[in-house]
Image (cartoon, rainbow, N blue to C red):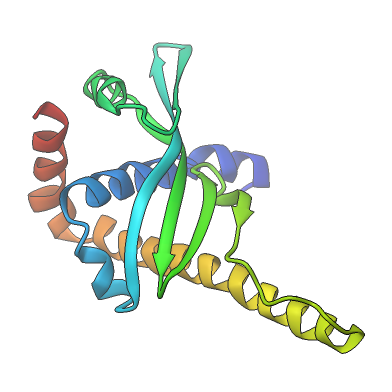
Length: 174
């Protein structure tokens, strides 16, 4: 049995590949997300993306942030062999918006902002508000789980090397 730390370090690349694939898919085929969830209005890159380029034993971290930041520097980093290690996403579904940052090495969420819930007027409304917020948190988690499951199936298929990798390389070089 693998030690947890060894397994974590050995397989953390898969989360980083997932985030890189997610950026590629958002950029080149945004309609794809309808196949995961028909009610998705959009899934977009938010105001921050972090890439890591490991050269020999050194590691270079590239952070692109800002509401109107261009992602050209990120694509340049991908050309040099970097992978996405953290991405901020905006997820819109049925006129509701979630914003969160997803980290590749552990697929952990940070800064998860869910849509507004109804007002709390009475003490009895508190329980409903808590349940509604839990439901809204679950929606973001379900989205990431669905996307990651699709990615794992794709990543372990023949299609990954034959079709997906060439498309990603073409996107990076464009």
